Length: 251
Length: 331
Image (cartoon, rainbow over all chains, first blue to last red; front, side, top):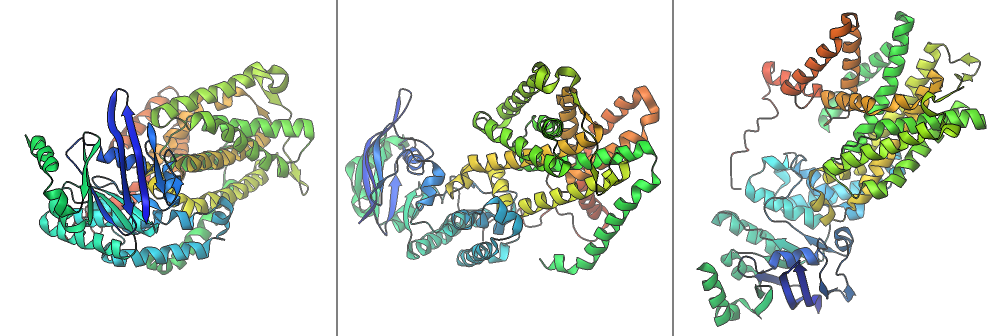
């Protein structure tokens, strides 16, 4: 069953068409790769799904519900969480506090409960959830360090942890492997598989082909804002149009 | 957590000593200095409520005017409705909070520099209402007639009982502000400050939280204004100019705003310092300005960072800002 369906999606910035009539489906349980040369529209696609941009026209159907144009926090509440390019973390907060922010949807409180401490049980449950996810991500040892002090691999793992504690159904990962050495890449691939096995559907934008081919069960290739090809990694790898697009991009 | 339980007796002694000091203090001061600590206590509430607004990373220039909204509310409520201080204080807070809530809609469409300028303009607009609408707000000469309350037969015109009353109200307000900051809401405000899009991506409605901080901060500013006016007896638009706002900013910045107690240290020490150089007459502003420049140059994180620095220089522990593991890559 499709958890996410993008239909005829177009996004224009002034005269520039970033995405043109893009359509694809993500099945529940997928690790779906969204690949393509630079400027193909992958990140724009992510931002639209996550509510940071509104599309010019077209629909995004998530669990039989139109979500295009909703605010990011509303989309997060429906169970779609994105991670960011580079290392987007709350740099001045500790690892534990970073992940604790991720429990917002379940642990948010009103001002009176906050002052009187009436939300104690809810906050305790949130902290337990955070401990559990930090353990899962191998970050327990670093729980009291500032996010800014972490090595790159742990920063990316923390970004995943923040998303994961919100208990998403669909996770959008934006270039989680960028700038990693082979060892870090392998570790991150293991973590991504673990997230998938815990029941989260994943859509991945990534340039690291080793990671993409190793992780994804299905790929959608974008080029100049349009869908160029779709299929299993094997099919895509042997697709003439894809080979041409990547080679011309390399020149 | 463990360090907190370890030092509980030390903390208890500290709080008891502080309470005793604040209670005994006015009896050793002259009339002028009694006034001074009274207004200082009120200004502590002003800076702490302002800090809540700045937690989201947005600095406004309207906070002084919100103090004024509270002051005018208390004055009008006293003069026209005959309300006692028990009612004028919360009412002043509520009206200031209400004004802030209405201002959220235009102001919170802006961020950063634009928010700063927008909040300044909105504040001046409110001040102009006080100046121009003479029949209600008394124009430039303001309103008078607020009497110091007499509660339980104690005349609050005497600065000492009113100081105790103020100390109690301010302490209670600080406790609430502290609990808000240490709660889930405080964490969310910090998160919005450091990375708004990341906070939004896990479901935080950033606009609502910025509005909440602005409204609650203004609520307590309003209470501070009412406390002030019940002692002064009269209110004018000139008490809440951007000049006063600049003092609030200086107190917060020099004290440091990353910890709850930073602005309190700032307002207390700068007020004492300003009083200590009172004799110097004309060159007083120059010295005051010089100290500000020095403190910003050498203590960019504020006076609150001094204990950490001292520990770094003299203690056996390494300074907290030199993490040993920040260079290592790979896990």
